[in-house]
Image (spheres, rainbow, N blue to C red):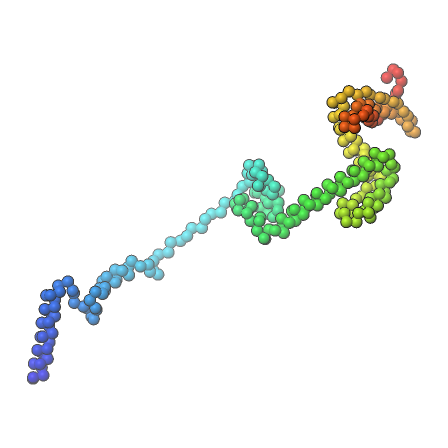
Length: 261
């Protein structure tokens, strides 16, 4: 009995002490289930958790952007940065076509131009410029052949010399790529003289005759096949050579050379 009375007094004393503390500190709330003062309440924690995203939130689907095929524009050909490599697609005229890649362009033209500088496209670009280098070499070979034929014609040499002269030049200049590829014979030299050098010579001579006075000398001759030809020679003062110069103008075939013609 005494033990129960002692326990009752201890409980009453503890309760009275809590009432005194509550009256002295009204702002402090009693702890719930062992919770320390100043900690968040369960309601506050649940409210804070609601603000955080959870795995059960609805996922908003991402709409894929539609790709549009680029159509060819004639204005691109007027731009220097595009005109060197951009053309119309031979099979599909509406699509732009890259000559370096040999492919149709379906995206941005500017981005494709930047991609041409990458390492993956270097072999194709190298092939493109190698082709230009070969074209330059071909022009040098043609120019050398024309100079060779002009030398033979200027010094009144036989065109048969051209059958052996290119081989001689190649052996004398073994380190020259142009000399190794010279191919000129008698027939080719005659063709170059008639078709190319003749028109070039007449053009240069006419430019000189327009700036000075000249006299025309004509003479008729008959060749071995009994064909009558009229040779025309002009005489004028050449300012470049600083002397009176006679130049062959033309050789015309005539039907009759009588005085009534």
